Image 1 (tube, rainbow, N blue to C red):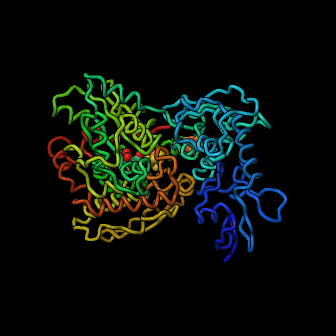
Image 2 (tube, helix red, strand yellow):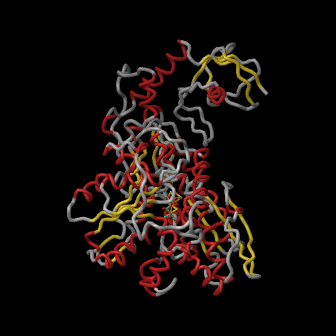
Length: 568
Ligand code: HC0
Ligand code: SF4
Ligand code: SF4
């Protein structure tokens, strides 16, 4: 243990603790910009500079380890002048249009300028106009707002192993860009949005579709139907000061009705359908031995990755569409027929933790008869914006239930939002269908938790099924390289592009970290535990849907509506 003093207050820390972390234990927040708790420390911005007795230069609190007897001061005149000086320099190279910035009110730089009273620029502006990138449905890059912290670069490289973003230029010309300054969709980018989640300012942001959603709501000729993804309900509360991992499903439903959606349904219903179709597909593939191992395909970041990085292995992806797309396909066909509504009058909105989903809905195969199945995707951040726009006092809202029939879902669907969840849900159904026996303990712990790659072998009726679960594309790469080399022994594997799965998605609130993700994961398992049905094929409304419309899993009509094919 190490003993030190910060601002004359004693604190004891473990060896290896950085000054920034030690200060937190004393409830002091040393300002930081390039530091992110889940990333490698680079100490680029130096805004965390502190004075240490005996040292002539200021030290970076994010990267300097505490030592025995250390005496640190975080609030001396020289520290404050340095911090203000750094902020002035950043502002000299920063587009000053905070009022119209998507991160207005939610920006680390804005908070720091306010905290250090850097209200008027003292240094002449040096920034030059730079082209924005955004010719894609998901992601917008505005280099004039960039603070060169490098957090986006590290997210892309260290989480996804992709390296689309990098520094270019020197001195005042230094900027972050893609290879050959190309648009994201011409690069190896998969639109996962992890860079936008890591960006402390408004330089990398999602494409905002909230205005389009409001326009549809105000249009008297449109019936606007919303579905909400499994992991939004355990993250939304963050924005309203609730403890991390709070389950706010029923308040969220009330808020969505207040915003003006005509029907509030649950993506989880679509997830149950995905599982019945995917389990059936898996059983068929195991029996035929074709295109093995089979991989899940509900994460569009992952699908984009296979298309761009492993186009020779696209056959391994399950043809079952994602819950979001299955949900919308049923809404605009069966549901529309039953309610006697022209599907072209229905406007479907999906609230997702994801920005790749904004791209997924534009794929040409995701619709029919000249209409798109899902009309708009807004992220958890987008929903927060709408709730604030309407002026809803979220925390004091009464609770309410989803509409039916597409608001009813099982516990298996709830856990889709965490890494390992799709696998566990699929196993619950596959096991029962292959054996004809009831699964006693539905909780399959080997696929739970945040290990990068989890492997297991299950015995189903004497047949060994080898499975794996990976989150982040860096981990997925390990599996894909094995398949390419002909060395992969799995039958079935799950990949989610984001750390922890969708609960750590690129569209979640910007203070998402792995520690926060852990709370969200626990919340999803709690929802599963407290749900009446815990296996997708037991969803009573799904049974009805198959009886009335889809006939059986894998039927001709199920293939038409609920399956697709991926191509390079
Ligand atoms: Fe996910 Fe999904 S679980 S991808 O992570 O499969 O976005 O939350 O909605 O579609 O259900 C995201 C989350 C979903 C879909 C589901 C799947
Ligand atoms: Fe990299 Fe994902 Fe950002 Fe694309 S969206 S640049 S893949 S982190
Ligand atoms: Fe989107 Fe979830 Fe995939 Fe991330 S893990 S890209 S949030 S679907």
